[in-house]
Image (cartoon, rainbow, N blue to C red):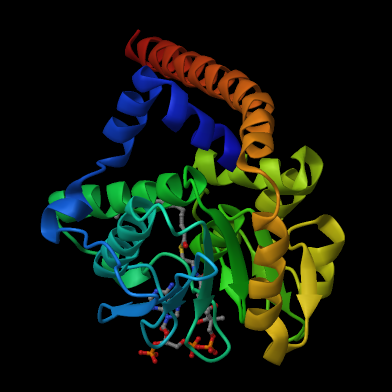
Length: 291
Ligand SMILES: CCCCC/C=C\C/C=C\C/C=C/C(=O)SCCNC(=O)CCNC(=O)[C@H](O)C(C)(C)COP(=O)(O)OP(=O)(O)OC[C@H]1O[C@@H](n2cnc3c(N)ncnc32)[C@H](O)[C@@H]1OP(=O)(O)O
């Protein structure tokens, strides 16, 4: 799916426009202009994000440092998007590792406090920022690896699933999954689609309907993560793994992209049809109540 988005962002101007409308792209850029990285190795920091870029390997490491649990607030999401935009514009950056500076937690998902009791304008901006993060990671031209060094529920799990590869700390205290159902909320369809693309249809059905959080071993078993390593080894393994991915010529990447793009389009058409059906059904129910 990520590759599919990459392809359409490269090759389909119409879809790019569609996605950019969906994603409110540019709201992040409007706040702070991206800067190109000139040094061989560099480090740039916002309050909540630290990026170390090694120009010799072309690999950047994004450290999420929003205490206590890297919850995805509007401010944090905006900083993530700005950091991504900057890296994306620097063509020498080919790989990105995302990890957490917070102990025991990769990301606690959407910031619940930022969703509650806020103005409609804030909620709209917040929700657009969530979509923007998703699109930017999924559509990235860089190879992305999530170094999941702690728990990663809900939106945190989504973030890791938008990456090409996931390495998780092998600590049974940590968990990962889309647990929205347990919170009494329904995960949006694109959360669901992202999970289907990662672990398949049946595993997603079980995961979403029961709001399951998986231990690292369980997550590995269903393919929600790709590799488990000792807690101390998550970041080094991620950078080693990145070397392997970057050794694959980009052209092959693009070929696979076309296959996945086809699947993604089919999915999108189905989703639109199902939305139309739901609207028609809702109207029928409404009408039958009137008479
Ligand atoms: C605006 C319009 C939007 C409309 C949206 C509508 C629908 C959306 C539908 C679905 C999408 C939802 C996606 C989500 O991501 S919802 C968020 C789900 N997240 C969780 O369920 C995680 C809850 N947290 C935990 O499980 C644990 O905190 C942890 C991450 C495992 C860490 O555990 P630990 O024991 O280390 O820490 P604490 O539990 O003591 O927490 C420390 C501190 O952090 C606060 N906190 C935790 N999670 C969040 C969060 N998601 N948002 C905000 N704050 C969070 C927690 O309250 C503690 O704070 P305190 O002040 O007490 O220290």
